[in-house]
Image (cartoon, rainbow, N blue to C red; front, side):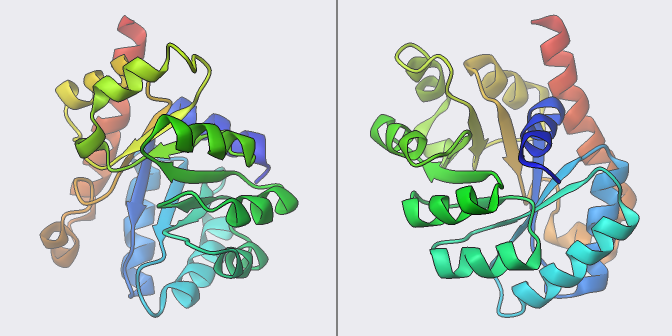
Amino acid sequence: MDKETTLILLNEVGVLPLFYHADIEIAKEVINAAYRGGARAFEFTNRGDNAFNVFTELLAYVKESLPGLSMGIGTIYDAETAQKFIDAGTDFIVTPCLNPAVGEACLKAGIPWIPGISTLTEIYNAQQAGAEVVKLFPGEVVGSAFVRAIRGPMPKVKIMVTGGVQPTKESINEWFGAGAYAVGLGSNLFPKDVVAQGNYPWIEQKVAESIALVKEFRANS
């Protein structure tokens, strides 16, 4: 998927699901549920020893079976790992911190790089390194007031908030009201007990509800 389409999907839908599981079949079921719920961008997190193998198989499945879904990899720290996933075909890369070398690899590949930031200086440096969207993390520590405040000196900054976002009307309204470009949701969409039970209709509904809350907020703003 081309870079601009991924960024548009991220903003239009407003919710980026984040998930990791070592079992490819469970990962497929989860991403299917998220897709049915309306997600059109999905971040598989690089948090297990088998993450690369699962991701490559999952990516092939997505391209064949889930049209219009942008599939990215998260929790990438260095350029070497980034290049490995770029070569595998990832649509975008999300990093927990700011590493310009990862940004350079993404720029060369023509894919979005969404680096983690928590200060104004980091946002500036991320933009200088080529990031069009930054990830505020951890959101629950920095707070929505930060997002609102920096829109003064940086009115065009595009911030995806991860950490501290709840799939509730209050939380969605708080973050998007502050000016969030999108939000990342992980364990609140995919509780361990729900995944263990194979309750994929619950996941589908929770994703759909979260996306609907974003649309409702925007419609009323």
